[in-house]
Length: 189
Image (cartoon, rainbow, N blue to C red; front, side, top):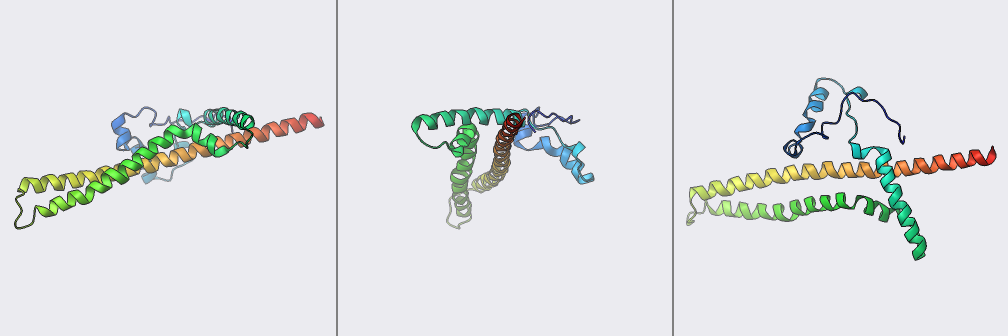
């Protein structure tokens, strides 16, 4: 598990994707096409991102756990995995929080306001011009498109963070079991 390198033919296109490609998920088109034409096999998959390898994530989490353990002993309390996970992945969680906050507060509140302004344009006594109606309709469409795109990014990044947390925890468990087995072998041998 840790440190075991498999040779993959395909490097992850997300590593070299430009910001626009990332924003519109263009970097994933090649594997979607391949999956549409035939069933995907293991050889078709990309290598993980460099920061997602179990050794790297496990090392980060192990360092944070060691610090949490020392701090807990000094404070006379039990160490908490949840605190360690939050400290390790805090910036990623803050980023997800900002995306979610922007979508659910700014964009969602703007939708009924834009729709109300658009409907006012069609009132018989309205002083709004036809150009105003086009402006509000365009803003409503742009708002809906941006909401959809940001929600897709939120879900993709939330799944990515969850996978990193899972990888880190599995790596720590694997290391602990390996150390325990090695200690048991040396004490009986």
